Structures are given as structure tokens and as C-alpha cells.
Length: 336
Ligand SMILES: Cc1cc2nc3c(=O)[nH]c(=O)nc-3n(C[C@H](O)[C@H](O)[C@H](O)COP(=O)(O)O)c2cc1C
Image (cartoon, rainbow, N blue to C red):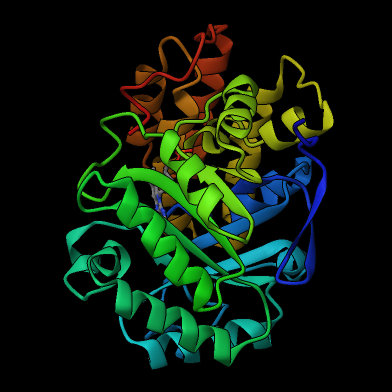
């Protein structure tokens, strides 16, 4: 029997009101995007972009590109950090706790070279002892819930993912978010959802599955076939920021929601960032949003050409004036 997507669960002794998480995405799950998602509701928790643990204790939230939030979101907001040194990670976690975040999430999935070269992100999958030391140090430093988001490993071996999950939980992780892909795979092959079941069976804390959940049916199938406690959603939430409300609460989007949403995102970016950075973030987001449409690549290209926010607004209005057709699912060429 599957729980409703809005059903509570306990993580680290704290209540979470829902089974869907907004997955962390660099350059995308910033304060402006999260505010748009929050306007619709329906999620359990929101995850920030990844923040450098080294830099975090010295960040000023008014100017930091990544460590920036609205006070109202703190009760449901988890800050993700990356780093390779246990004491540095613990110090960052202390600041996150002091600022009032719901929890701290340790990145063990990012496989881009600048992160892995530091021994952080997915590099930690190669060193389970160090990975567990980091979790233990963070656990000791804070009382807020500690999450770990991780991938299968560097080879396609579910046994190592299960072994790592056990180590992370014994070291004090309160919940796991598991993306069952090998680290070198940049979303080209399908994730292996079967491995989520293996991790769930082995872990005695809530496990959230992640990877290629593009519809409510996908979401229910992931829950049913793996037994996971909830689902973290990445790209599809960028395409449809209202999907948490739609899937968990029965919210019915109106026909105008796409046009409205394209403008609201600009309004919120202008509110939270200065114009150059607002436009840069809009250009990054519009690719995923445009994936909703049959001719999304043209829409995305037009908006990305815009020299300023006013030109981006004109490109949006011109596209919607053409009465665009929605695709039956996200355009995978735009959805990388
Ligand atoms: C542009 C982009 C940036 C991402 N940045 C992060 C990140 O900073 N931290 C992280 O743990 N995962 C990151 N991810 C991975 C997502 O959280 C998620 O695991 C992945 O997109 C698969 O989920 P999905 O199929 O629902 O998108 C990123 C993904 C994308 C597409």
C-alpha cells in the first residue's frame, strides 16, 4: 500500500510534510526558483544548489550566488554542501544549523572534474571510509537532520551502493537520496531503479529515490517497485514547477500556467539577483522549461539570445502568441 504523496514522515526526529523533494541542481535551485515552487506547494523539502563547504562559513547571504535564501523557506529547506575534509564539512554544517535550515545534505554524486579533483562529490564514492568519516563529523557537529545524496559508484555494482548506504547510516545519516547511476554517466543511460530497492531494503532510515521521474505515473511506479519512502525530482520540476502541487495535492494547472510561469520566473530572478546574474540564471532554466513544447528548441534559442530581461520578456510573449503545442513528454534533447 503506497502512502499518499502528501503523507508525513519523520526524518531525524523532525516532521516532513510530504514525500516529494526538489532535488538540488547547481545554478537552478536558487532562491528565486524555490520561491516559485513554494508558491504552488505540495513538496516535502526543497534542496539548495550545492555550496562549497570551504567557502560557506564566510559567505554573506546578500551577495553569495549560492548561499542565499528567503527566511520563510527555512523550515522546509535543506542546504547541500560539497567538500572532502571532515572538519571543513562539519564547520559548514554548523553555520547551516545556526542559520535555521531544516537540514544539511552532503553531496556524494557530483562527478564533474573540478569537484572530483578536490576529492569531493562523487569522488567520495571511491573512498567509503572517508565518506563515512565526513558523515560522522557532520553528525557530531549538528543536531539538524543530515542527508546524503549519492550515486551507485564508479562501477555498476549495486553491492557497493548497498555497502556505502550501510556505512553512511551507521555514521549518522538520517535519510538517503539515491540516484542509481554510475558516476561517469551524465544522464545518458537510464537509471537502474532496481538498485533503489536494494538500498531501501538495507537502510533503516528513509530512502528517497531519484532519476528520470517525469510523470506522476513514473513517481508511483518508483514508489511501488522499489519500496522507497519518497522521490526527489530534478529536471521535471524545472519544466513544471507546479508538479509537486499537481501530483501531491491535486492542483489543476490552467492553460495559461506556462506563460505565467515564464514571467514569474523573470520577476523572481529580478527580485533576488542583479540583472546580469538574473538573465544568466533565466537562460539556464529556460532550456528545461522549453522542453515542455514541441518547438521548444526554437523557444529556448530565442530567449537565450536576449540581451537583457526586457528582451527575454518579449521573446516569451512572442512564443506564447504563436499558440505553441505541448509535447507528450519532455523533449529529451533539451533535458540533459
Ligand atoms: C543542471 C543540473 C545540475 C545539477 N546539480 C546538482 C547538484 O548541485 N547537486 C546534486 O546532488 N545533484 C545535482 N544534479 C543532479 C540532480 O539532483 C538529479 O540527481 C538528476 O538530475 C536526476 O534526477 P532527474 O532525472 O529527476 O532530473 C544536477 C542535475 C542537473 C540537470
